[in-house]
Image (cartoon, one colour):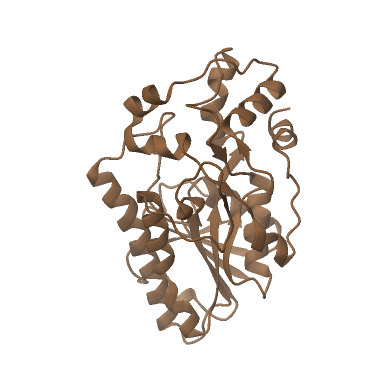
Length: 306
């Protein structure tokens, strides 16, 4: 199958490209700067403007899947999260909605419709909650991230009317030793200064990168997979539990908390992603038949770091 990925040079996009190529698929990554962006080996890169189907829409046919992952980084690309200015929040929202609209333009114009569109989203769709459990049946939240996810998903709502299968991937916190959130946690623990953020009672809805890639491939290849799917491990943990598991794997203590006010002072509104959290369960993904390789966080961390 030909698989077109928007955001193919990103953290998840590169890893997914490699996994799909290894499985025998042909991968095309759309990029605004294909000459300078980094892609996985074997990927064909194609120029696009991130707002239309110009230059790539002709590639869509009945043997095509589109994976929509493009969007401005929520936390930035540096080691520390960057603050959400008004302008950055606008870029975060606009970049997701416009790329969804570009996908819709390509699908509308295609003589043969694609087999499936995997629409990227995040567990931020549900907002935050202390003890509530969220499944795919839960309503959306009321904060900024929830609005971003709602609008991102809505950008491709028309697919159903066009007869195209759509699977919405609400992605949790991917654990990978070489990117994403985990390296941001490793440094203080390696310096014997690790500990919970804020109260430590907020939930982390994590997923091992191997399961994230496996679940995305499952949504592409499973013809009955339609609707929203939470891509999170079946056993979410609190921030304190995550810290203790990480400390145990690294043979380091997890005793020095970062006060909530200090985190908020340093990073502003983006700190809610870490300080508030949500307890999200992959009910629909498991019901559809996906089997997790890593359900327990300590085993996942041992695999990644041990």
